[in-house]
Image (cartoon, rainbow, N blue to C red; front, side, top):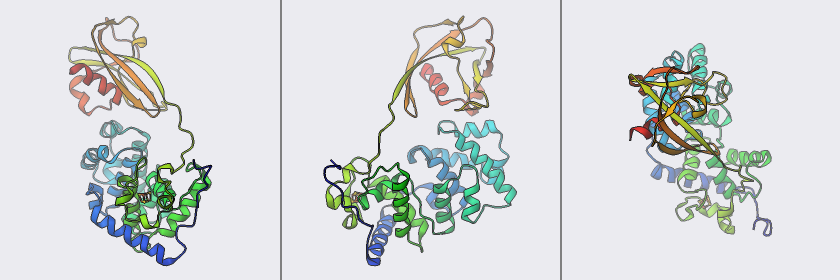
Length: 344
Ligand code: SF4
């Protein structure tokens, strides 16, 4: 256990030669092993920014089809700024964390007012939805500015590199690892260096079983030298996962289906459309059998039961929406899964 055997936590490298060696090894490895991803084929700050926002909380494989489609629909800040909310949400539907899409549009409007993409870190950082990580990523990748990024992958790699045994969620530990990232950053190639560190975390320095045998910086890694790479980073307590049951109804007639729009002040999915829950339509006549599926949102897993049903009259708060329009309609992922579940 970490507590019984204190880690030998040292500064990243005491000699400039050691730091230069880490940079050289990492950049060489990145040049040979980086994945060919669409946003790595451009230096357009708009496209890089869109990819960075999409990649927050979402896996690379899930983002790729959305990225291409989104940029076809909204190829520049002006197109995004003037998009209808309904079209924007439909293009984002399935990616989750919808505040990201709304902030993208607010930021696009600010960029249009600025008459161009901001080329300095401070203005970038002030755009809606742009935090330290995104501002550093766009500044370094698109403009070659020397700002080190600190995302989950980078924190994991650095915590192992220096054998950081403190809780990675604490502000102090993050500050220390931020200083390590600053020290290591290659000022001549900051964008590539940042991406190399993130790529190492995503493909080699994996959360559970790091592939140290394939790692270009293993001679410098203090966690590996001490044999504690599988115990780092220290993550603190995980939130308890919960389960909930949900019973949805698919009520359709005359080529239309009954849906309700979530209120604009909803904490989640404002502006998206949902199927009725069983309790919302108590006099519906439910048909059986139906279908079921699971859907996880953050730490809650929903066990969703779906049935077709009929009603005599349209319940308050719901509207009949043409099925032919649903493809480009901002449906919640749960509603989309429920409709697909019954059409199998
Ligand atoms: Fe991660 Fe292993 Fe490389 Fe250390 S040697 S940085 S633990 S992959």
